[in-house]
Length: 130
Image (cartoon, rainbow, N blue to C red; front, side, top):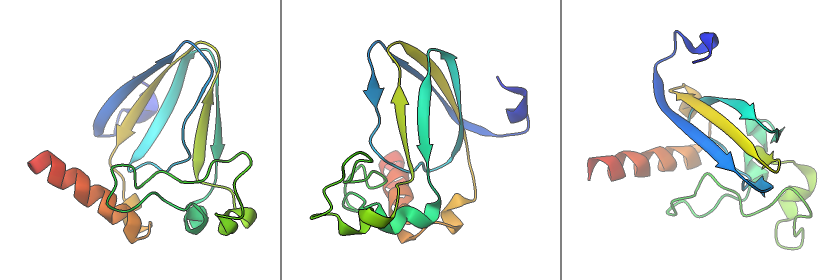
C-alpha cells in the first residue's frame, strides 16, 4: 500500500495484467485513484474535466456512459465534430507485459462534473441495491 494513501478510505483495489499491447477506451473515472505500475510500462493521456463536452459520451442509459464514442487517434470528425478542438479525458496504453494496481477512494468529484456523471453513480447505486 502506498504511504500517500494511508489516510484515504479505499473503496476498491484493482489488479491489471496484460501480456500484449493494449489500450483502454477514452473515459473518465467515477472516483479518485492512484495507478501503480509494478512491472512493464503504461502511458496515460490526461485532459481536464472541461473537455467532457467534446467527449461524446456513450448513451446515459448504457453501462459505459463514462466512456467516449471517440478515440484519441484519428477521430471521425465528420461524425464527432466537437472532438476537433479538444482532447479527451484520459486513455491508458500498456506495453507488451504490464502489471499494475489501482487504489480507489471516494472523492467530491461528483459536485464538479456535469449531470452525466450523476447518472453513472445512480445506475451503480441502483444495481448494488437490487
